[in-house]
Every structure is written in C-alpha cells, then in structure tokens.
Image (cartoon, rainbow, N blue to C red; front, side):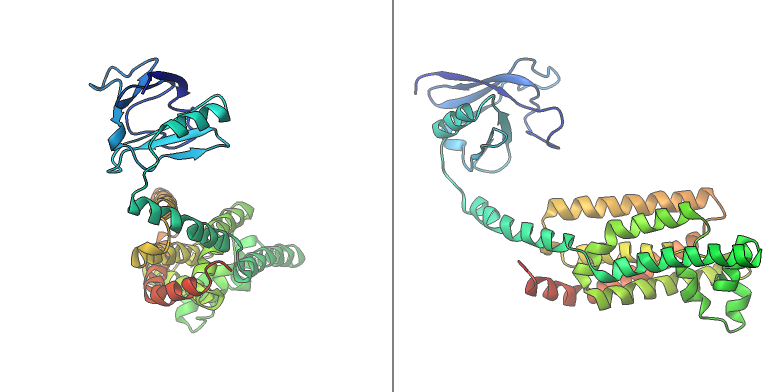
Length: 327
C-alpha cells in the first residue's frame, strides 16, 4: 500500500470519557504504511515509552465509522487497544474507514446486536411511572397543609408538624404507630422538601419501571417504616420527619437489583447509575454524621430495608423487564 497521511484529532476536549487507551491526545497524523497503521501525535506524552502507537493491519478488526462526528474508531482484534480518530470532514472519515480492514469478530457482532435492545430498555425506563409523581405530589401537598395549619392556628412549625403526624419516640411507643407512615410526608422547610423530591425524581422513576408500580410503592413504604423503626430505637425521645429514609430505600432497592441481575443493563450504564447512587448515599451519611440534627439512623434503616426488599423482588422484576422490552 502506498503511504498515505491524514490529519486527525485523537481527543476532543472531553467529549468522550476515554477516546483511546494509547495515551494519545490532541491533533496528530494518521499514517498508512505498507503493513501497518501508525498514530503520530503532534505533542507526544513523554511519560510513556510508546509515543507513536501502531497497528499491524492483521491485528485490526471491528472498525466503526460515525459519520455525524465525523469519527473512525480503530480497534485491535483482541479488544485490548482502541483509538478514536476525529477528522475535519465526513469525506475524510469515509476515506480512512475504506482503507482499514473491515473484519468483525463474533463477540463484537453480538455486542452490536445487543445495543439496540439495550437502548429500547433505557428509553422504556425514562418513561417514568405514576406512583413516583403521586408521592412527590403528596409531599408537596403536605408541606402546603403544614404551612396553612401553622398560619391558621398561630403555632410554631414544629408544633404543626407534631400535630400533623411527625414521628415522636414517646408517642409512637404509646401506641401512635401510624406516625411512622405520616412522618414520611412531612418536611422541616422548603430546602428539605426540594432536596428530597429531587433525589426521589433522580432514581424513583427508573425504580418504578424496574419493579412495577405496586412493588415500588411497597418498597418505598417498607423502607420508610424500617427507617422509622430504627430511628425510634436509636433516638427514643427524639422527633423525626422527612422522606429521606424511604428514598434511601429506593436507592438500596436499585443497588440490590443491579447486584442481583447484573446482565439486565449494560455494564457502563449500571456502573454509572450505581456509582451515582453510592456517592449520594455516602455523601449524605457523612453530612449526617457531621450535623447531629440529621437522622442517620432513618437513612441507614431505610437503605437496609430497601436493599433487602429489592433483592427479594429482583428476580421477578427481571422477568417483568424482559416481558416489557421494546414497549
């Protein structure tokens, strides 16, 4: 093959988490030699020994073309090395793609066949569910009711919350166990409410689609109850309100599902969602340990209750997911 050179870009300033695994970045030159492809960056990274990676043509397989970017992705046959090559025009990308081997491995073909089904599944999750929006509406409504009650009766916000069902250790032990439920829908202030509803919106819609509305409602309530029970046990004289115990339970249920049924979603999507949920959980627990007025026992109880419930329901939820694929 006659030597040919093309100007390319090995990275586009963060448009992809990892545009290549060959320590290439910025503009450079793609060189087609007699028996190999050489990637020459304008500014090689001197920290690494190999500064101009190359592929023998026989090692190349599973090359893909993205005409919209425009971009060509070169991969080694064993899947261990890859590089994304951005070009200035679609025609340049098409020319590079035409010059490269077009072999496909069976594993790559299978992966490509799974992607459309996975995309349909993720779109299905994004459609949301009615129970999550109903819970959000109930929490907002109870906040407005609390405001109205405090204003009309000229009482402090704390007294209004207690009258409307805040969780109180002495009252719960005295037979008012219904407060374990009503406390889930009461909040101390607007910031408390908005933060909790944002967290519920973040994960609740997908969780409801995964488990189904009835199971999801059961997880939410059971987790909230578990958080309330642990809160009363740890703070027998305390008062507690908020949906965070139940929301932590939703997080726990989704984490249990991803652990129990790891093949239901792509590894990248599951890792991203799981990492996001874990970071939220850890951050809020740390904040709770710093600020003593935050009830971490309710968070931990809800998280544990939701994880157990999610684990027990995961197999049935997975079968339901399979039945709903593409709808």
